[in-house]
Image 1 (cartoon, rainbow, N blue to C red):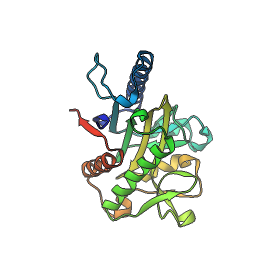
Image 2 (spheres, helix red, strand yellow; image 1 turned 135 degrees about the horizontal axis):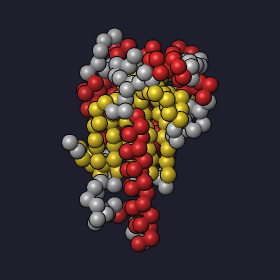
Image 3 (cartoon, rainbow, N blue to C red; image 1 turned 30 degrees about the horizontal axis):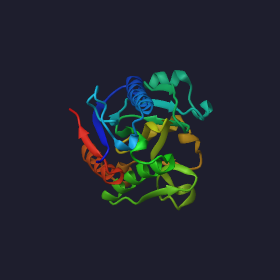
Length: 245
C-alpha cells in the first residue's frame, strides 16, 4: 500500500499563516505517531487513524507575496538592506525554524512544503533532500534546461560544474522532528530576480541566482510547471497523491 499524501494548492498566500498551517499539520502527525507508539502500532503498517480520516502526510504548493526567511543557522547580516527599505518595498521578514540561511520568496516562484512522515518512506533526511532536488532537476529538463547539484551546497543549480558561473534555480531548507518534515523548496519559475539583491542568497556570495523563465528566454506557464513537478515527485516518492479542492 502506497503512503497517502494530501495535496493542497494554496494559490497566493501570506507567509505567516502558511507557516502556522505547516506547524499544525506537523504536530498533528507527530502526536498521532506518539499515540500509535504507545498503542504498539507499527508505522510500517500505514494504518489510518480511526478518529481522523485524513492521509498521514501532506504536500502544500503556494506562491508567497514578497518575503525573506532566515533559517536557524543563518546570519542576519546576509540581509543587506535596512528594515526601512524592506518596508518600503513591501517585503516581510521572518526568522524561522528550518535549516539553511536567508532566502527570498515572491510572485512567480513555486514554493513546496512536504509535510511527510518519513517512517512511511525512508528515515534518511539526506535522501529526502536529494529526491526534492531530483524532482526539480527533472522538471527543468522538461523545458530543455540542464540542472544539477554542487557538492556541499544544497539546492538545484544551472551550470553546476562552471564554478562561479553557476546559478541557483531552487533553494531548499527543511525541519525534521520524529521523522516528520516541514518547510521544503522554492523553485524560481517567473521570479523577479532583482529581489535577491536584498540578500546574500543562502549565505553564498560567489554564485548567482536564476529562474526557469530567464534560462528559457520566455515567460513560463506556472500551472504547467506545477503539474510536471507533482508528476516527478509522485514517481520518485511512489506515493498515492490525493488532491483536495
